[in-house]
Structure formats: C-alpha cells, structure tokens
Image (cartoon, rainbow, N blue to C red; front, side, top):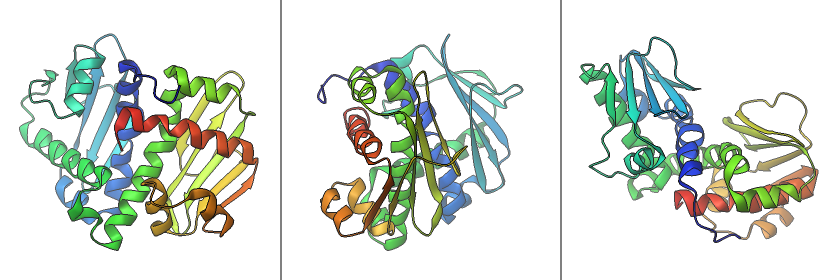
Length: 261
C-alpha cells in the first residue's frame, strides 16, 4: 500500500494544513523571510471552491497561519478545485488562482509570493540553503513540522495511511529537535479522530521523539542515516509508547508520495 497513488484531495489538504503553517516557523527563525515580509500587513485567504481554506496573515516581519477563511481578509484567492490548487503549489504557470477580492493589493501579493518562494527553497533543500549549518537546521525544522502536521490530512483521507493508523494504539506523540523550541510539534491518534498542532501538546504525550540536534534531524529527514541505528546510539530518543512512534514513522512515509521530499 505504500506505493498507492496520491489522492488529489489529500494533497490539497497537505498544502493548506501542513505546508502553509510552516510560514509561521519560517518567519520566526529566518532573517531572510522576515526581510521579505518587511512592513507588510494584511491577510490572504486561499480557498477551494466549496471546499477547505487557509488564511495567511502577514504582519511586519512575521506570518501567521489559521485554518479556514478569515472574515475581512485583504485578499481572497479562489481555486476551482483540488487539482487547480495542487497545480498552483506545484508551480504550474497556468494555475493562476481567481482573485475574487483584493486583487489590487499588488504589494501584499508580491510579498506573499516572495515569502512562498523562500519557503519552497528551504523545504526543497536547495543547495544555497543547505550549504550552511543554519540552512540545514531550518530545512530540518520545517521538514519535521510539515511531516507531523501532514499526519492529519493523511489520517483523514489517505487509504494507505489510514490502514497503518488502524493498527496502532491510540495516544499522543510529541516531536522536537533539542535546543529548538520552534520545532516542537505533536500528533494525537484517537479512536474517533486525529489532531495535530505546533508547540506544546494539549496534554502529556504518550511518546516523545527527540533528535539530539539539527544535524541529526536533517540527516533523518533526508534518509541519510539509519534511524534505527541512530536510536540505538542515542542520537534519536524515543521515550514512551514506542509502537505508536514506529507506526507514525511508517505513516509519514506516505508524505514522500505526495510532496516528493
């Protein structure tokens, strides 16, 4: 089932609920991203017609993400369907969204486009980014955040991931890179629903996964080390309900089918 085809609806939710939230962590820790935002102030809604939406709020030097379409947004970008949004995020030049409101906010849209390009470079691990330790740490942080937040859309709609999750015990898993509070992220696998979020979990975790530093996290995210050996060597600490952590790791593999990272 690991090679099952990607579902366009799941992919669109991954972009909205797992990739776009990384903009907040990006501007919180990357000086270049903060410079790209500059003094911009306004909110941009990305919405699928009769479907889900996400809102990115730009403030001087920072970006914030929220699920759904915020009222009174500065700009509303509408997509005809999941495939339209997916093509837009894949860089297809023809996949231009419909600016149903605020299309005249050219300066704000330019800031957002530049910030999105920076996010793409970091998450794709462009050579100019990962050539230095700070860039590798940034790539590792955002990759971890997207991977864990991505478990939510996978759990909701991906057949292969759902099959894996059904075999796991319920519980909350917390992930972090030691020394990097912005990397903290969690996922709760429940009997009836799953939830994910950044920062401190809503209650004590049943299992905690911690990388000993950004270089270990970077190598693990790019599959450049044997993670089982890294656990044995103490470079990756797994404390608590180990079967849950192991199963979630397998579910995360489905992200490579969707995001090709």
